[in-house]
Length: 461
Image (tube, rainbow, N blue to C red; front, side, top):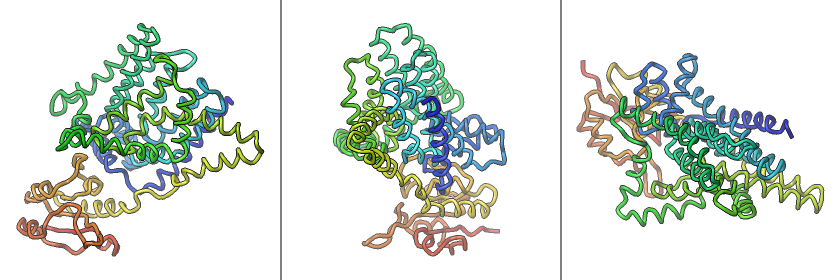
């Protein structure tokens, strides 16, 4: 079994490499991270604090781009996110083996190495990749044979620099150690984590728009329950979506196994090891409805449920083995086939945003820019993507009113009631600003031409 984690590490690397190759373009938030990374690589340190996204992941990508300037930004983002995500399989395997035995460790590693979204999020250049590693390292530091609160503090601090929910690792880890009557270890964890976490508000105070504990959490609250006409109805409505979101994120078979394993190995007290694995995910589920229930928000702490899925899968294997030799292998095949979608192409329908964005970038003159309702297109056109909120008609018209706006590109949605734009902007409003429909470039296919509407401002000489 000593070779097992390294075998699964290679499996995790292979799966993530394949998924990265099959992912056409980054995610919507991924392009914001890449914009930050490219600016940082050019020497603009302040760019890490000019968006609502936490800075550590783009800083890592920017460092790689600085060291290897010929590397494509998307490839660099995938290398950092997918590479660090793959390494997380090792501490996850160790935690499951320590708590539940070698067979549970093997099943846990299989679940993580082949899980669809555990590979897809990093391939889309999201911060979840390094976050998985921080979470798994934190759990292993506290639940290993020799607990290392200082290492857990480093993992918690870095997790917060990646995503706002990383702060839970400090709170949960400290509370769990206090429940186990290990006050000195809890103090060590906090003493290491807090200075690292303080780098975020310090960076925003010095280089950003002013002091803030976490701009992403504030932003998400404002576009979630904070901006809802009925906060309670918003919360309840989003809470009802959580089961399906978790099912999608963790896997159609692995989530039921995780629930069964958590019931079988449920903690008998606050200081029980299982408590440390369950509480972060439970707290995340309590917070997510304040925002919007999406499977991506359950991913980071979902990895801590995989050891429970592993112990349930190991028990199922043993039960089936007692009934015949073929049954347990059929069970393994079912587990492997359940997430076969991991090998499917990802974001292929969004490739036009990359291709058109690059074409528009070559057409722009000095100081000119594009206005669109597609953050990916903005990035590939060489400009900063907008904040991660719905883009309104007022947003488009306000930016399009600038004489420096050369192009406007809008998505057209086709339906039974006819065509309509994702952002409801009238042609007459754009015409009044001097922007007229333009012929689509040759790089667009017929399908692309039907789904996009392009406008251009004629240059005056």
